[in-house]
Structures are given as structure tokens and as C-alpha cells.
Image (cartoon, rainbow, N blue to C red; front, side):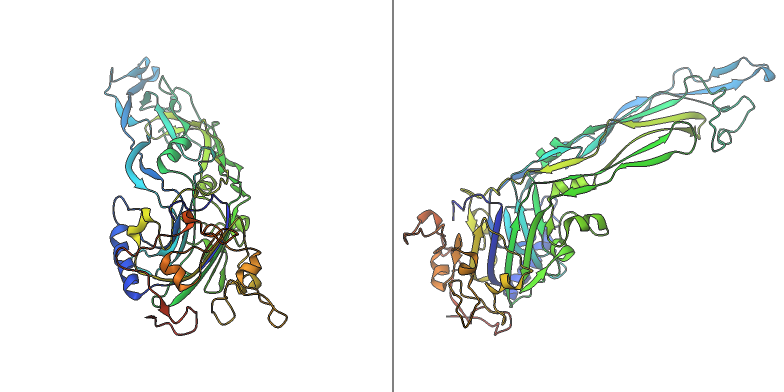
Length: 494
């Protein structure tokens, strides 16, 4: 469907698929090259099963640290009255500047093709392929210190053979653990180094593209030559996250103290539910392969619960740790070193949860025309999709509307009776799906009999029909037996 379906925040998607071993082998081999490429192609490592939504472009981010400044280092010597001297004398009149970098800069790197929304099979080229879900939004939410650099400034340094006191103490022994002996240090002390945080949130988002969500894990292993059933639901919700902020104080020359002033937090995560082969997945098994890692973070696990899901930038804000610091100490080369870091604040991000950008955008099974080159041969059946609705795949009643106890498809139009109270998906959901490919002839002809393909009077909506890929192999053909989890798996064309 070139015009796709209307923008949405909620959806329920159900379908069956089977990957021939030849296609799985091809995916694994293709992924080995793609994932090692310096610039990866769109949907690298993915065999699509359904794609939809707008295509975005982005760029890699380069962060060089050019040497663009310098400070002078003056050497002094102390000759006190006891030695017949007159005090501090500078030994080098005009030293050569010591070069340093004032910090990282963000530069536009190579172009990056951003993936559309998809459900697909992912291979890293090594381990077993598994199910993956990707939701590409159009959002760049309100952010603060989502990414940051420090602008680094170093003052001229003055150091000498005698520091601490005039009693010729070694520079290191002048530090006694609690008192900073500053008598008779070389002129020009302390040696001040200053870092000032700079917020680079907008630059990073402009370069890397709109926000996105990922789900799926190795627990959802895809076995070749075996039918699999996907039941997926999600809801995008306005949410937010804040990061860690801490302060370090050591200006009194006593050992520095560190105080955490703000702990990371996530509020109102979005939701996703996946049952794969009639098994409901939660927690790490649901979110496991996200670009962000939540392993070992009990607080984040608790905030997300069984089905919570946060976007890439939400996780980035949560994971960002900034600080302010002022510390003074003796330097080993004989001067008082004072460093300060200021100008930052708690990182934050507000995800606005705009609808996914799908209106007037290609929608394809297993892939839309704009990513048709990613298709590998796959058998599919019983595609159903509702927008504006959610279900909880952890509830067995929700699953039984789509897949029965024997692991077979439930006809969408099945109605409950006094003898059999199980409803098919249409009765259970309360309406026909937006997109439906049910019969073999519907798949062959690309006939969408959902509400976006046929109106209430039974008139075909041309813009809501699929265009079959029958102009070049592989053509769409009918297979027997019908899909099931536990029945015969060997397929033959009808």
C-alpha cells in the first residue's frame, strides 16, 4: 500500500510466518557483511516481515578533539635568605606553549539510512536469528544535556623546586592529608584548569535523527522451516527521564567529598506486549536486544515493569551522568593545582509520543516498495492489524482469539456459541481490523479486506490495496498445509 494507513500510537498485530532454511542461510551470510560495514545499509541484519512508516535520513557523529590551544609552563627556583638568596626567581623567561585541546567538537559524519518501522527476523551473522520489533517515530523531544561536552581551559603554570614551606619540603610531603600548606609557593599559583559544560542535545538529535523504540530478544528464536506466530501490541505514551548529577568538593585541600544530588528516574514508560508462538514475553526477554542496556539496573527494571518500553533518547537521558566539581590539591610537579567543572545540570528528556508517521507512507508485507530490496523468500499467513487498540498478550483469553490451544490459527470471523465461548479476533476486538489478509487468494491478489481496503458497503478502497510483487520472482503462491505450531511443517505449493 503506497499510501499506508493513518498515523497511530496504538496497535495490535497478528500474523504467521515461516522462513525456509535457504532464506535463513542467506540472511545470516548477508548480515555478516552488512553489520561490519563502516556505513550500514538500511535494515542491516534484518529480514523484514512487515514494514511501514516514513523513511528518515541521518548522519554519523564525529567527535574529534583538535589541539587548538596552549598554555605556558614557567619554572621557578627559591633561594631564601638562609642560602643568601632573594627569594623566588623565574628560570625560563618565555617558554614554548604546551599544546592542549579545548574539548570535543561535534561534526557531521557519513550519511546513515534510518530504518522504517518493522517487524522482522534479526541475525548478527553468528548466533541464532530472532524476532525484532522497531518503531521509528518522528519525534525529537524536549531535551537538556542529553549529550554534552566540556570546554577546557588551562591557565599558565608556575612551578618550582620548593613548594609548601620555605623549609625545603618535597612537593609531595607538603600534603599532610588535611591541611594545604600554601606558604611560599611560586608566584602565579594556583594553576587553574576550568571545564564548562556545553549542552549538545540539539546537535546530536539533528545528526542522528528522530527517536525510536526497539524490542525483541534472543529468547524469541526463529527456527527455519517452522511456522511461527507473532502477536504484538504497543502503546506510545508521553514520558520522561532524568539522569544523575553529583558534586565534588575539595577546595579546602582536605580529601574531596562527593555528593549525589540527583538520581536517575523514568516516568510513564510506553508499553509493548509480545507473545511469540503463544508464549508471552516480559522484562529482559521482551526488551533484550535494545540499543540501550538495562541489565544490572534494578531501579530501571522496577520502573519499566513487565511491559514498559522507553525510547532511545529517553534511555540516553537516564544514563547520562554529569557533575560539578571544585578541587584544589598539590601537583606532583610542584604547584597548587585547582580544577573546576561548572555549567551543567541534570540531563532530561521528554518524549512527546506523537503518532507514528505512517499516513501516506508505504506499507508492505513482508516489505514496502521503498525497502523491497531487503526481502528474502518467506511464507506468511493470516495478517491482521488494528490501530488505536491494545491487548495484553499475557492474558490467555487475548491470545485465544488469535491462536487456539492446539497452536492453530483461529478464523478471524469465528463467533462464540453456547457450546464454544471462544471468539475469533474480529468479535473479540469488537470490529474488523484495519488491515487483513486472510484467504490465500487475498495474499495472491494483494487484497486487503480490512477497513482500510473495503468500506462499510463492501466497496473496494483502491488506495488501501496491496500491489503484489508478481512482476519478478518470487511470485506469491498458495501453500499447504495451513500454518500451525505443532502440526506438519513441510510445505508444498497447491
